[in-house]
Picture 1 (cartoon, helix red, strand yellow):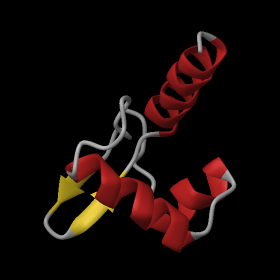
Picture 2 (tube, helix red, strand yellow):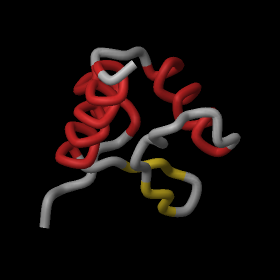
Picture 3 (tube, helix red, strand yellow):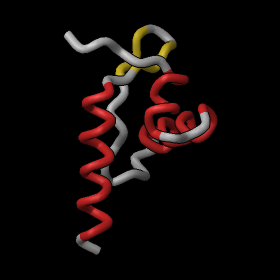
Picture 4 (cartoon, helix red, strand yellow):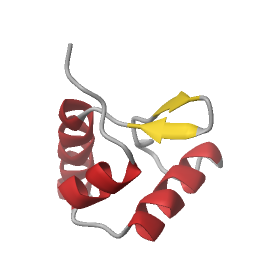
Length: 67
């Protein structure tokens, strides 16, 4: 099984600050994003899979290209 990334590792993978990634996660819960970020909550921690984040970015690219 692919290891989970913590908030800091995921932010680094996406070239975001931790604060920016927190904001993306918050907007997910408010349904403001048409493609919500794939996050797994384990207790109070938010964890991510690198493959899911890469697929998420690809979905965003496809949406942006179609507009």
